[in-house]
Structures are given as C-alpha cells and as structure tokens.
Length: 292
Image (tube, rainbow, N blue to C red; front, side, top):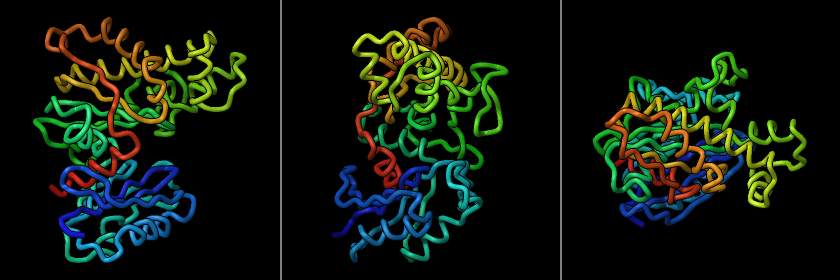
C-alpha cells in the first residue's frame, strides 16, 4: 500500500488511527478507548493500521489545548497528557516522514472543506457538538490554527456572562449550555428521565416539551457563538457535526433562527449552516489532509 497518509485522531474518549488516500478515503482503521492507556492506546492503534504500509507522512488531530510550535498536547480530558510530546513520539514510531499536528476542530473543518459539506466554501467554521463543543477555521482554503494552533475554540465563546463554570476555567461558555452532557443534565433537572443525548433527541421528536426545550436552548447557545465568530472572521459557511448534531434539525433550526436575529451585518446575509457529511471520520480525513 503506497501513496497513503497515516492519520491519528485523539479525543477524550477514543483514539483512532487510519490510512487515508489522496481522495480522502479511509482504507484501514483502528480505534482504542483513550482510557486504555493514553500513548499506549495510540501506539497500538497506529501499529494495527500500519502493517508495513509505506506512508508519505503523518497527520495528527488532537483535542486541545495543543502547541504546534513545540509539538505538544494538553487535552483537558486526558489528565496524564499535559505538555505530552505527541509529535516526537509519533515521529519515533514512524521515522523519516513529516508529522503534522493540528487541533481536532481544525482537522474536522479541513476534512469537511476538502471532501464534505464545505467543498463550496473557502471561509468556513467547522463545529463539533458532542461531549464538548469544539471548532476549527478554514481561511482562503487553508486551515487556520493561529499562533499556537488553538484558534477556533468556539465552545469557549462566552454566551452567558456569569453563567455555569466551564472546564476551561471560565464561566458561561457555549459548551456549558450546548454540549451533550449539559443538555441532558438541564433536561433531567426539569423532570426528563432519559440518560443521554440520543435519547433526548428521541424524546424531542416524540413531542416531549422538556427535551425540545433543551435542544432549543442548546441551539440558541451555538447560534450566539457562531454569530460572534462569523462577524469577527467574515465567514460564509458553518458546518456542524458531532454526536449531538445527529439530532439534525432539532439543533440546526434554533441555530439558524438565532442567526437570523443576531447575525445582522450585511456581509453575513449569505451565511449558511449545514450538517457535516463525514461523520466520525472527519477528523481523520482532515488530519491526513494536513500532509498535503
């Protein structure tokens, strides 16, 4: 197997490795729970997919914060990976090829730009609404990570000043309202009896008023964060993926209604919001695209 890139996608709950070709096709893939041992889990996944393949580079998507200058990662949800030298460790495992690192939100946005719902846009924001709310930016067709690689953290745009504490150390971030566990907790505090965001979506589709209100509230929070980001960055497209986004229009409808009220600048009148197309593989495909 030649002319392929090794892609690694590291999150708080799982680590995935894959071989990806130039068309964005995932040819071989392995996943491990992050709890299985951090770097040990990542190394096992990499070894499972390599099998002697001649890769031309490695692309890494990782939950943040990251430091692309130092090649280190400090994911909030992986306690023993603080300033972890991930680029160095991967380079030692796969020597002689370039190793590129970016935030998982950036890689999601790049993957959707190259091969998914963002193919029509060169100025887009990709958002992942899941256990957290992450994001990444593509400007002029290229991924934009900012000074250290952390640009695009839309989940930490403050939408409720003085609101609930956030894992980032701030208060009132969009993530504290719209992330799956927060939607579920808010609904349960009001009498809903389910256990996860998937069940919450089923209840909302069945007409449960509390479940519907939870998605309305979460979509409003995401919409407010998008309105602020789009005004600063002059975007024309937002692509939303992640487990909570599987609820489809339950989440996207309130996002769009919020934007119709809060994104009033004339240069935002054509701003579109679309559902992501690549699903759970967007980060892997985008990581591979970092290599070129």
